[in-house]
Length: 91
Image (cartoon, rainbow, N blue to C red; front, top):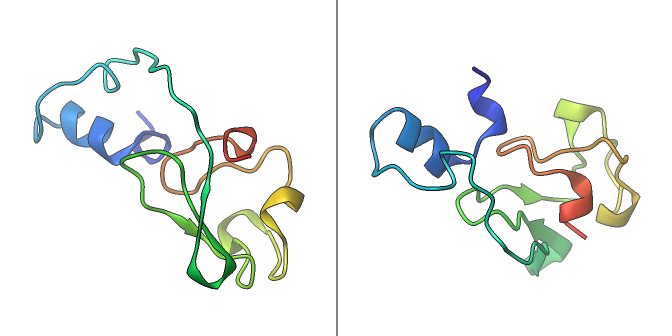
């Protein structure tokens, strides 16, 4: 099982550390995913339990995204490195 592609809450639920939730069971939530811009031109992952911040000034070395790459210019196959949320859900 690839725990890196699950939200933190889903992972904790699977490990029995928090109450089991529909998200952990794979039940889709109706939700408006949109990244929130925070200070310094950085973007907060729209997944509630994630907390990853994409900083265009740093890029994403885990997926070979060079520094200076705007959120809109990320590759189509880019996913949040913490929770696996696809790029198209950030926009």
